[in-house]
Image 1 (cartoon, rainbow, N blue to C red):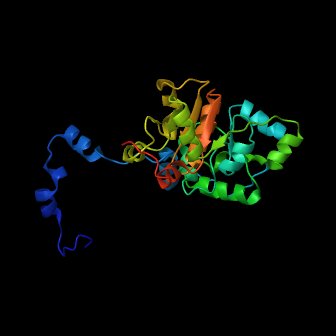
Image 2: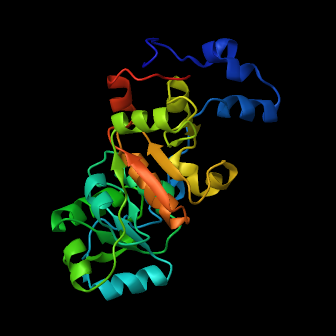
Image 3: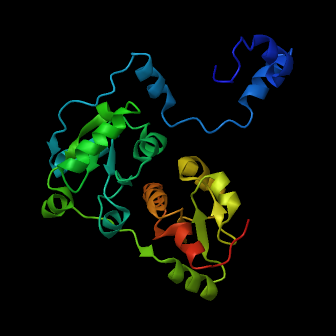
Length: 272
């Protein structure tokens, strides 16, 4: 009835549906898979949850971990995921941690894209409420069960224990524009998805989605010691990308706050 017809549409579909005009199986599969959106992050876990083969892990305790326990988890192959804002992360964070902001509506998908390969997570948060939100969101992609705990006392507890921190410089689009006028070879990395990049980007920027940064960064002309200005739509994904670059040994990524929204609002030039 959704088609508006009051009788079966099988005959109609056989006659007019282009997919049903294809006799060859390989051609049919290719036709049906053409122009499909990117598969959701961590799709295997999502399917397993829907089929009842995997506990989503939405419930359960999230223990507080000492700084030493967080360090041990990271040394054992786990991920330290900083769920605070990009501004807080930029000011000071646990070295090697990944910044995936829990306030994002795409938080769980982004964790699935960049951290699903880690066996366990230690979260860095502002408070217990952020931790609870993160665990609930991660349950949707079957990753809540990997949360081993969260850093007791947050970054204050980390520094009080005598551990070093890392920072990520932030710059505005106006500062980036001024830098580009002074230094012709300024490196700009746009980590939005390919379709977003195609609709308009900073001239001469390199386009590489943060989802594929680990696999693709070596194929770019960016050097490990280059100052790399990283941009996305608003400044969240670019902060995630900066954290990935730091983990990969790139020494000087800079997060462009406001991202392309701010660049366009300032009426700065665009390339397509």
